[in-house]
Image 1 (cartoon, helix red, strand yellow):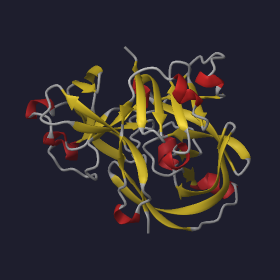
Image 2 (spheres, one colour):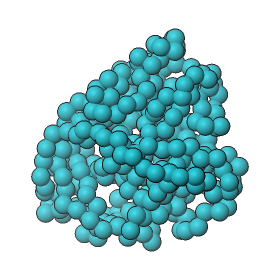
Image 3 (cartoon, one colour):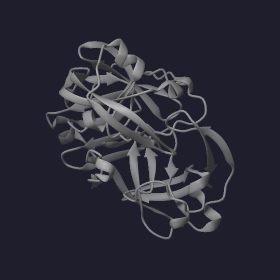
Image 4 (cartoon, one colour):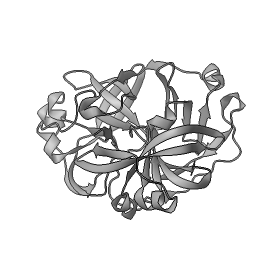
Length: 307
């Protein structure tokens, strides 16, 4: 039975944040798709499934597979094609899969797509008004610009945006983790260094996360840097988890310096009880930047900080 990673960690209560997008076009005159920001760093995009809709989906580069809510899949009359497991921060659950004729965002479509069906009720109860989660199995077919400043998503299969992108091209690492039969995926992992850290760390660029997050911080941060306030919030599946707010951290990703980044961790992770595969050390929301360009073929990112 395949296992699919779903890493989003929405906390507390989500709220839609209105953003004025205007008529800005994507670089290379590529057609844009509107984004709605929610819960600080998360974003909603409209997705059509089998030529129906569109419906609101959470844009999530940290989700290995696209996920349809069970009730939405039932409304579409979709059957199941197999069993699967979805796992994320603090949970591990059974799910099923189905085969779609087409999955589309704006004018961009991927056909014959296998997706996961999972109950997103608890996640929706936190305030995320979604019918599904759009994952890397769809996004990896395109170059992608997440333009938070103008609240738009740019998908490109022509290479036009890449030609016009300015700024440092930072390579991201890939992972072919196939543990428990999971589908291999190119995870968007950036090498970073904390100014007071004991070793470099690997942070995944995660558009579905609403907070920077670290796994096992005791492995690379000094004791005084992993102590902080704690509270309970919702994990990726809407279940309550005990989180710890770490003291703000200064870090550097290639030539980009970031100050006072407010990372969270699970209370169980604070003392080194790592509950996640070792291919990366944490999550960094794409909403933390003014814009993020991701070249899936070139395996590099161009990051524009908000400061």
